[in-house]
Length: 134
Ligand SMILES: [Zn+2]
Image 1 (tube, helix red, strand yellow):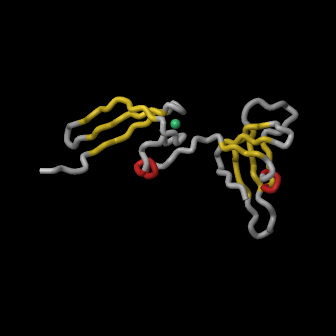
Image 2 (cartoon, protein in one colour):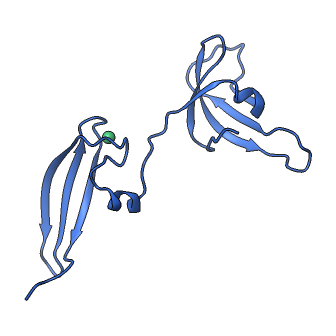
Image 3 (tube, helix red, strand yellow):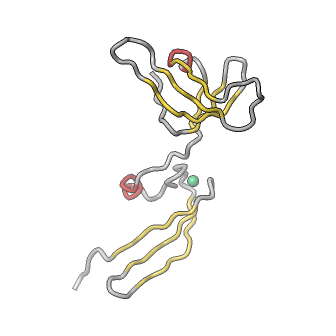
């Protein structure tokens, strides 16, 4: 069983070592027939006129190929809040602190920029007042 996601872009390496980049358009499932699933892929980038742009590949053929998901593995907000020391895009722990800005109008909201040293992405954390000791 392979676990591919529609709309994701994959690098698929064939047995002759040729790699093509494809977007998964659709997974066709035929549960009542017992037939294998079909994966409709659209090739991305320059292809020669003689080659098809859209392919339909049965699951059992796709299973024998090397497939790499090129989409960033973005963690959810909840996952990030549980472990804010990892880049939400590539999960690197090499993170740089950026500027902190504060808004004191009604409730205090502090924002902090963070940068990933490995994938160069930027994101912003939001801090709110969580308690007081009197
Ligand atoms: Zn990163």
